[in-house]
Image 1: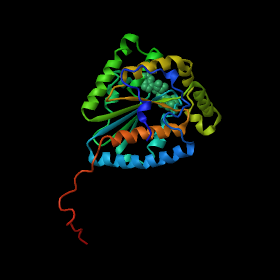
Image 2 (image 1 turned 120 degrees about the horizontal axis):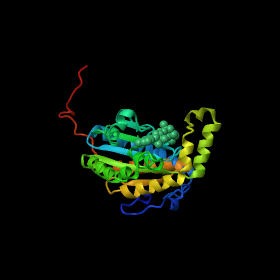
Image 3 (image 1 turned 90 degrees about the vertical axis):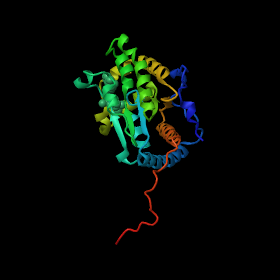
Image 4 (image 1 turned 180 degrees about the vertical axis):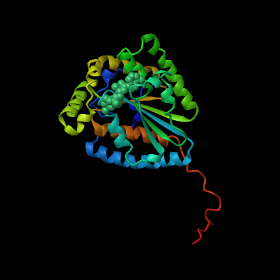
Length: 271
Ligand code: ATP
Ligand code: MG
């Protein structure tokens, strides 16, 4: 059994990102092809669990994905959610806030996209940008962003109290891996569209981002809304680890199909 707790930031712990090797395959000593086979099995399991989530219509599931540029958020969504029923799963991508969004508090746009009963929502970036990019690129003064860890803990607790299961994952790549992936966006014509020259300004501030990530992880990993740091240089390991986290979290909800309508055994469908 893959032990997902090894990837979890324990509440109260002080995680140090430079002590987690993005190349590692924590909790897994098998080969790549075994991991890929396992991911396929987990996909099938996730499909069934998501069907149950949708049918039962009781729980709400929120998966938050954060990473540096080219960290693999899109690829994760593509691989991990392969096969789930699109009717019950939504992806919410958070970009630079619009003028309307900026005219509200930073959680306004976030709250509006949180999952309803029976839904699973994946946040591709999230309210954590408001203590990451906002902090590193000085988009708000420290007096403003430093209060947000408290807001976020309280906001997430509200969601949990009202029936949401929250899983937060940081895809942890290193600077060399990012260079390779950004270079591929320049070199491969079909990836050119993904290249954003603005990413280079963020890359220059790599260490500041790591510091901001560490504070976010340490301040907001709670029992009810834990953070997982997934080494993500190797995509096959990343996909398997995230599938495991999702499957084990959904399994823990002990969901059941709703009771069958009465007299189902004796009901005859007329010709
Ligand atoms: P990729 O990783 O493939 O480049 P992406 O998630 O970066 O995909 P983009 O559309 O390129 O998608 O970028 C979204 C941008 O929006 C990021 O630079 C991010 O930092 C920025 N952003 C998101 N939320 C906020 C926020 N609250 N304030 C300011 N900028 C934000
Ligand atoms: Mg980008």
